[in-house]
Image (cartoon, rainbow, N blue to C red; front, top):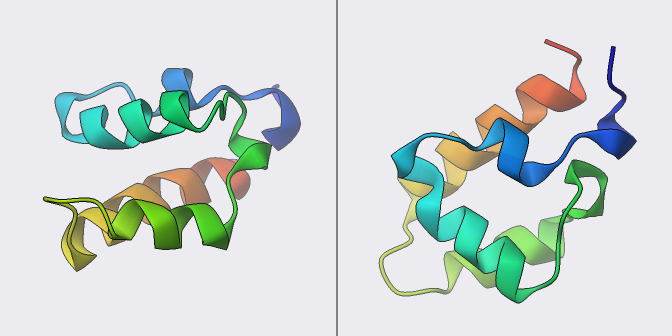
Length: 69
């Protein structure tokens, strides 16, 4: 089983609804789930077209992997 440290963002955010988050992570050179911090969510939330609902969806997806689901 993979640990949080070796799970890539690309592998867990695969559906189309995560395109903007994947693009943000690429621009910030974030590859692994363990690299994403609250500061990244704050910066991502300031992008055009990213609202509270999108942030919550992304956080829930990442939290599921962090919890080992």
